[in-house]
Image (cartoon, rainbow, N blue to C red; front, top):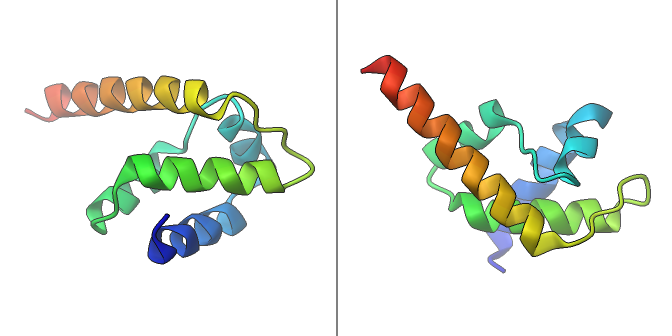
Length: 89
C-alpha cells in the first residue's frame, strides 16, 4: 500500500466520529469525505482498504470480511455518485 494513501486514511480515521467509524465496519463510508478524497486525486478503493485496516487496528470497531464490505461500499458509492450526477445534470 502506498504510504501517502495510508497517511490519508489515518488522517480521515482520526477525523471521524464514533458513528462514522462504526459505519466503516458495515462498508458505509462517509460520502462527503470520500468525494473530497477523490477530488484530491486519491484512488478511493485504496483509501477504502486503508480505512478498513485502520478499523481493524481499532479495538472499538471490529472490521471483518474486509473485501465483502469493500465490495458493498464500492457498489454504494457508484449508486450515490450516479444519483448525484443524474440530479445535477
